[in-house]
Image (cartoon, rainbow over all chains, first blue to last red; front, side):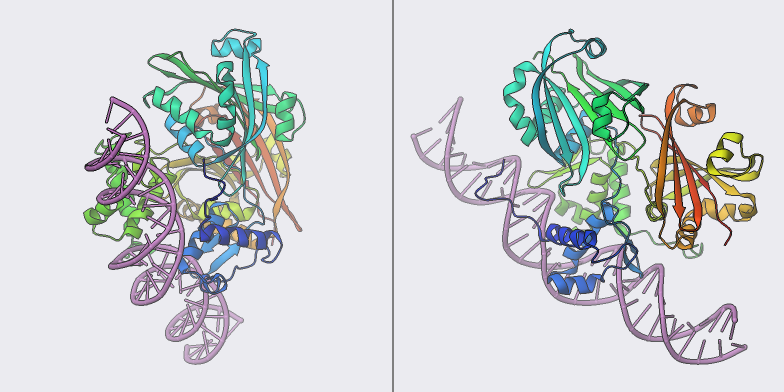
Length: 247
Length: 247
DNA sequence: TCGTTCGATTTGTCCAGACAAATTTACCTT
DNA sequence: AAGGTAAATTTGTCTGGACAAATCGAACGA
């Protein structure tokens, strides 16, 4: 998207945010200790208070710093806090989420729909689809979720775009649905974790997980079905199977 | 905590945030439409751009508005977006969370520890504790979680304070632990939902849920054990059983 | 010893302005 | 009609300043 010869300039407050995060991780500012005051950080980085506060706000959002009026900013953790698990209730939400995060492509491969999945989402068993496995990150690089997307094989040539951008296909979907799509039903099952899921979540194979199937529909029929696998811990898998109706 | 004769002044940007949210909910600004530009909002509310941007930032955080440089602010939803589910990995995090949210007391009653719970958290079966059921909300009023806290009976007289403030007891705990506490272990079980949980979550009794037990310990021994019940949907129950070591 | 008062420190709120960067619109050219 | 360019619009980044509100600690007094 952005011209590699003119890499996007990172804002000053992001640099400061990263510098402070690095200092915290390195033990420069210990957990439980106070950070330097905003004023002294202004002096150290030679920026205005606005810029420092914007950086501190990010540390706070990541759960690494607590800020109390009159008392200062205290280091809570030396790594970003637990992963947020959010449920998306409309394509708009999913689009927004995609627009605000990054996606690193881990794997692209052909796959054959198994019986269970095909039956649940109304496709034919044995169809060849494309599997994209990627890692979704915040703009700051913190891992958010492992995403496995199934795309009809005819869209295979746009896979690299999907990997780099990920926004367009959701945006296209949203536009195709005229934003008039919403969840119609949801189904939860408690299952022992399949080995792929267990591996991605870093848990023992067969440990209990929940699998939630959601079907989103528009006036013209089924548009998206997504599987979310998760346990109660810190990590989370969001498996999205994307289906496009013929236009 | 705050003198009722001098109610805490709400910041201007919160008022503007609420006003805009109300307008959106009322259909004044339709989903999919553009909001007025920051400049015109400044004129309408007679405030600086900083204040308007702070209000818009909140709308964005709630998932109601998308903001794109050069293109304007667009309404994504007319209600706040899905509930966040976050896992707390230290008392500090829980304290931070408690400090940033409000708690409405729904119920206070004596209760007797059942065998299962008592065994897991290392207390005696049959002990009488106090059960507080409350609803945790964001500062803006959006429901976050249903919380059931078990408190030793000798703390019953501070229950009203717990209900209104909720911060102090967590803060006290954190201070007692010298901030040097962290999670030591976690255990997940898949269970059919007990009727109280099913009722609170609005699901069928016996539907699959996960129950996660976390034990937090300090150098001086067990301090907190918490049960989190949840399914994969939008709602979430955080049951915290609080135990205080003799000081 | 305990509680109070007061001042210093620190973050929260808010203003007015400036320029950058991205998008949209209008217009012009072909 | 199509495409490309420039201007207008809109949000992003950032400065410098001001005062308010909350906290903390030291000095003080009962």
